[in-house]
Length: 232
Length: 291
Image 1 (cartoon, rainbow over the protein chains, first blue to last red):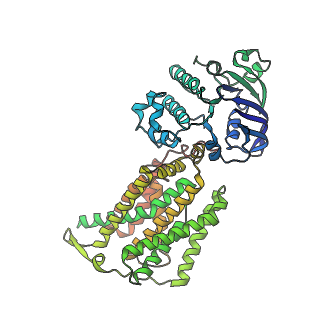
Image 2: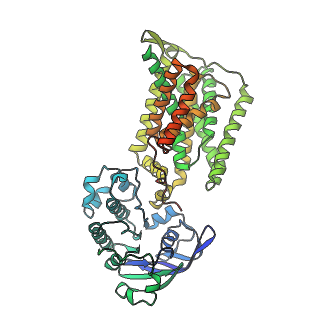
Image 3: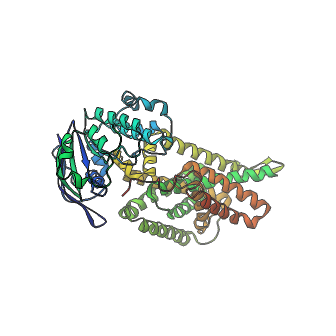
C-alpha cells in the first residue's frame, strides 16, 4: 500500500521545477517533505494531484499509475490535498464545507474535532486561521481518503493551535499515509516518522526523522527559509 | 403617485434580476462575461412573441422561451466554449460572436421593425394604486422575479447540486480537489444562464417591445447590475437589481434623461469604493488555489 513517485519531472510555464523526485509513502506513516523555499515541495504535492503536469516519470497509487487522471478523479481515488492556505470554501459555512468533502455525515468528525461544533453555521471566512486549518483537516478526515497531502499546516499558527494540529495529524496517521510539507522543523520532527529532503527540484536524502540532523544534506537543504518553530 | 413609481421601479428590478442572475452565475463558474446572454434574451423575446401570436398563453410562451434559449445555450457551451476551456479571451470573443449571430438571425427572419406583443385577459388589465392605474403585468413581473429568486435560492442553498455549483463558483481548483467534476457543472450553469436570459426575454416583450436591438439595449444595464452586485453572487444581483430598478424609475420620473447616467455613476461609485461589488468576494479570494 504505497504512494510512489519515481523520477518525477515537472515544468511550470516552460521552466523545469522538478527534475528528479523519488519518494515512497506507506500507509500508517507521516513522511515529512523538507527543504528550503523554492525547493519544489509544493509543486511535488500539486503534481501528485494533477494540478501541475508531469513531464516525465511516474506517480503510482497502490500500484496503479495515475497517468493523466484529472484532479477530481485523483481525489475520488483516495488522494486528498490540504493546500497551504487552508483548503476551505470561505463563502460557505463549516457544515457546508464538511458536506462537500465527501462520503460521511458531517457529525462524524465531531468526535475528533469537537471544537467545530459551536462553529457549525459560521462562514469559513469568519474563522480564525487555526480554526480554518482544523476545518481543513476535518474535511480531509471526512473525505475517507487514505492518502493525505498536507502543505505547510503550521504556517502562522500559535503554539497551542499548533499542538492541537499536530495531535490531529498523528491521530489521522492510523488510517492514512500522510505526506507533510513543512518548514517548521520542530513541528515536523514531532509529527513525522520519516523525512525526505528536497533541494532545487530533486529529492537528495531520506531517513528516519530522528536522524534528520545527521543527514549530510541537512545544513545545505535547510539553510534558508526553515523555521525552528514552536514545539508541537 | 410615488407608490406607483416605486412599484414600477421594483417591477423593473425584478426584470433586471431575472436577466442578470444567470450572467452572474456564469461569470462565477467560467470567469467570462457572457455576451451571448443578450442573444439568448433575444431568442426568448422572439419565441414568446411568436407563441403568444399563435394562441399560446403567457405562461406557456415564457416556458417555451426559457427552454429554447437554454437548449441553444447548452449547444453553444458544448460545441463552441468547451474547446476554449483554458482560453478565457477566446471564450469572451466567442460569446460576443454568438450574440451578434443571434441578433442578425432574428433581424433576418423577423425584420428590423418593432413588434407589439399581444397581451390578453388579466395581463392587459390595470389596478388603481396611489390614485393611478397600475398595470397588472408589472405585478406579474414582480411575482416572477420573486419566484425565480426563491427557486434559485432553493437550488443553490438547499440541494447537493447547488452546493457543488457554489463550490465551483468559489474555486474550481478546490472543488476538483474535493472530488467534484466541474465540467458538467459549467454546462449546467451555462444552460441555466440561457434559460434565465430566455425567460427575461419573455418578460421584456410586453413592456419593452420586440425588436432585434433589444438584446444590445439591455446588455449594458445587465453588466451594471452584475458589477454592482458582485460577480457570481445571486444575492448581490438581487440587491443591485433593486438599486438600479428603483434608481431608473425614480430618476426617470423626475429627470427622464438622467436615468442611465445615474446608473452608470452608481456602478462607478461601487467600483471605486468596493471593486468586488456589494456582495462579491474580495479580490484574490476567488480561486486562490489555482496555479
